[in-house]
Image 1 (cartoon, rainbow, N blue to C red):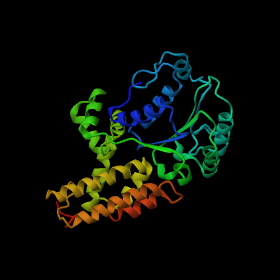
Image 2 (image 1 turned 45 degrees about the vertical axis):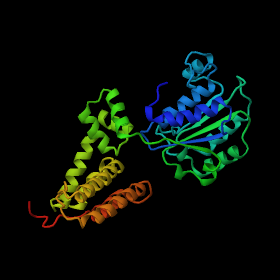
Image 3 (image 1 turned 180 degrees about the horizontal axis):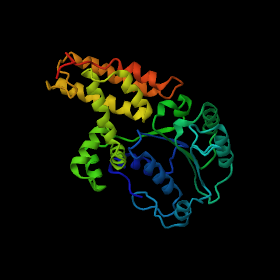
Image 4 (image 1 turned 135 degrees about the horizontal axis):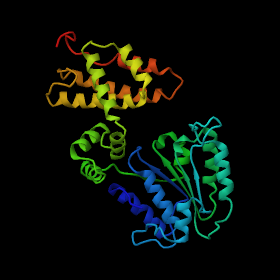
Length: 324
């Protein structure tokens, strides 16, 4: 299994512990979506169940354990993920029943006489009851069992669970690493640079957005904010449009655009939204923070159009907005 180059440090930590038989019974692998942490977790699980690992500690892909894992039938591997509801839609939480079933499974001995590996992904979607049930399992681990938790936002996990796991933080790739990786995925240099800038340096998101034309959405957000700054469009109009189509992603782009605008003003350039005064920089910095908080509010019972309207009303206006 090939891993992205920036995962090398994290892999060496895991492979070294596996080779020395010093694995913690709970591993928490953390990184924003798009950094490759799930590939890292899968590679670790494969290596832990492989009987013929290579010199770098990676699974051979040929032994019985590797073949069973690839077929989804390895008896010592269990995956806990978001399940489907009765109506066919994916649940938004991992439930207590899933964790209880996991605990019962791990209470049994390994069928192959080696490690038992449990992969919980996304672990930051455990509901409160599920988290409490998992805590009991982590407090009283069964022998030769490793529970791997994969999370985009580790802070959403209770501190009691985090404290009982060895945390593996995936480092962000350098710009050079990210561009080289995108080039290896057959993305031309110009598009790779634009997508990487839009994703705040996240190569996985950049590749995803290039594949599904998400960058067009970013351009639309930029046009809306420019029109709002010039008084050509109202906050209410924009809030309605953003609410109707991927509001959380639009807020991601809006926050990034505010950051970029502040950076341009700091360099003495005219902003893309017609802002020219350095005095706008603190306003943009504050708006960046409000936009990120608003993303969190979209997951609450608050009406999304009101969350967006409240935010957009504070967007800095261009001096003499009716001109130019």
